[in-house]
Image (cartoon, rainbow, N blue to C red):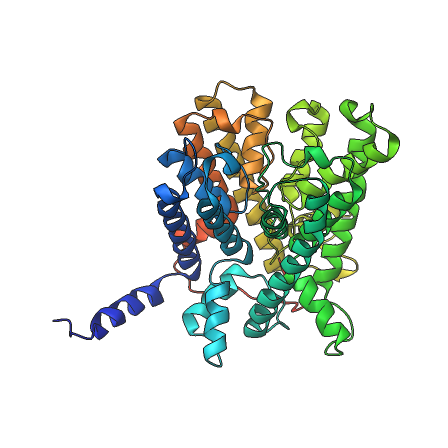
Length: 450
């Protein structure tokens, strides 16, 4: 066929090719495109500052920003000019709200609905109860995101200004977006260690991180309940809030009681530091107010567990997701009692949800083991540091014991792969590579989501 001057046959061919792809494959390609575009932009001399960064470091930063991880091999403040930092911030925003969300929002602004391709991608990206309409959900996500980030910037500005930080307005905007998207990128080489005793700074960052990590399902759920569209929130929202509360309480208590480096602090500062490090691990935001490399091995284990569990479905954070873990707990409880089905809060967990949870756990553990093994082959650093780095990268957390800048070339590529896999999800990655079924099974209980 000879292509016409309008290019219509070519466009038709592209659309046909896209229509044949599994939605998760389109998610994969979308994030790869974001990373490639960001990498090319960061390599421009306009984006470099001082000695700048090499091509591999630029690729690492682009992948870390799109995956909202926050691990860095070079200093963002020292290596990138204002245009470069703007590129990093844009990549964080794109990665935080999710692939195709912004594009779908603009599409919905011009027309009444989404194309079948975008609907398929949306179902692959968001894990929603059946009662949620994707088009309305996307509109709510965008509006809520920019409203919270604006409020966060307004709250952070006077705090940065009072502390005498250079360019307080830019710092407020950058860190508000980074916190809400649970990205962990900062413009200080010591993260927020200078604000370890500042309850206001800790409180604002924690609020932004929790709002991003609990997921848009919770926000939309409460908005619908307040407006009278539903009588009560879904079971998914209840599980998310329950899990978030108990992870915060238990994690904070373990760090407060067991971390030797915090015992020298006054009780209130010790509690604040323990809470912040628990919060930053479980929301996968990746900021820190105490040096992570100085933590004891017991505390590192607590942080690793929190990072692996991670945040909530349809949120900006990473990890296994707390709903997946609660499904696994339901299976364990049922098996211990000799029951034939898994139950949680008196509700039977649908078989397909259990199936997805077990598969997610299996893929996640296999990917983590492979990542640790490869880092052990390529890095001379201690095992616990390599394990922590791999868990942080796969969980898109961004905390590090300090080995990231010293990674070898192969080590950087391994961590890049882990961050990318963590952003799209190990199960999603496997589905994109091996599945030809154009869809995802719906749950038997429309009130539940994984």
